[in-house]
Length: 353
Length: 226
Image 1 (tube, rainbow over the protein chains, first blue to last red):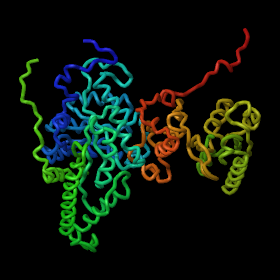
Image 2 (image 1 turned 90 degrees about the vertical axis):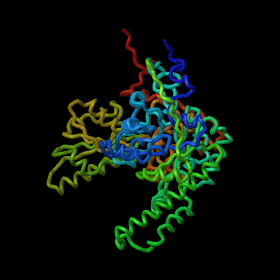
Image 3 (image 1 turned 45 degrees about the horizontal axis):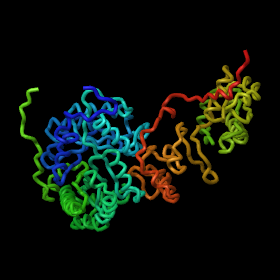
Image 4 (image 1 turned 90 degrees about the horizontal axis):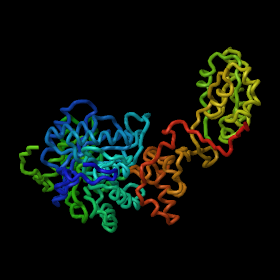
């Protein structure tokens, strides 16, 4: 079978009507409220870290995001970590940022990731290297996130490389994701920027962390006016707060994250029994107890947020970012009444080819 | 203009090593306007180096001269005798000036006295800011005259990343977000629709990534009759 540069979609690959056939795609296609979670690869070459973290996420989400050198700190590659998840029987969503690789390396890695059994990719700009542990590095940004979305979907749907040349043989078929930060400046442009990513081919969207539900509702109103929610699946970013300090830090220092004062007060109140005590006056047990009290409140708030954002029209699921706290995912998902996760496995077939 | 700033006196002294006869050569164009390497700066630096050499008991013969443009050989030729006579040439031109000297005078040892920073403009007295990255394929017609290549820290073409906050870039509160500037200007001019198309990946071949660049204008070349 020969295919021209503009190629026909591979009939073998989508005979089931699916773009990539990933679990996440099937869950969303079936109309289930989707749950994804995040797993940060280690700053080491230890595969056991991934396997241990995977234990906490097993059976409580439909896909696991593997961050790609997040905050510009060098970590195990998201594709390698994703391949380990495939071995563990979990569904990886590899993140790919534009900061570290040019279009050649990205396409090469995408083919490799597909060959290793990975079926979802989240296309991101990537944090600027000045925030990470190699601030003197050269940044790449050969393509931006919008262009990356188009490149990945073009490899799948047109069976072409970014240059337009046909892919001979198996094309990488990914369920393509992108991100949006609903509250980052200029906020008026954000729904349109989301629209651009969807126009470029984004099948699903994971948003930046949402704590301010009314502000998110305003964003979604505009998204619905533009009809974007009908062309993609929007998963809302949520994350359990660990402490009042974390809440304050995110409010004050992370662009695009709005944390209402009410939530900071609730977190502070959760540790009220230890209020006024300095860290060096507290025993190890007291500190642990305070931390547990904060975490319990953080999980409670997260569950409430999930109920609220789930009620917003146009929301197709949630993406849980429990940063370096994967243990929190199961209680959050369970508390939100989202267990068990849908089983999309097809009955086993006996292929003879 | 090309904007540059002087290296520290310590670095300059290291570059001069134990040379006894030094020529500081200024440039009368861009680096004069940005107060980094004009005749005034060349004279002051020569004077500072003379004082330093006296204090350190290491006598140097340090003179200075300024040409109109270090980046053109015909201007450099006017200082040819002084250049050939010096043990070290300390250029206060931009990187182009330093290389023009090296190319024109194969036996001269030339060292840079400036760090060439960017192409930009003065935004207020004493402040210069980058405006052009010389990408070779100008997109200013799409972005209302504000350059996303030079003014966005990630050179994004399809809008701001998530790090834009209160009009500034997340890398530094003193750096305006290039895309906020573009958005505001396009909104004011009623041209936001120009930002809605998905811009394709850029042809970086036309930028430095395609190798050292050269322009040949046949219409201007001197063709000798055979």
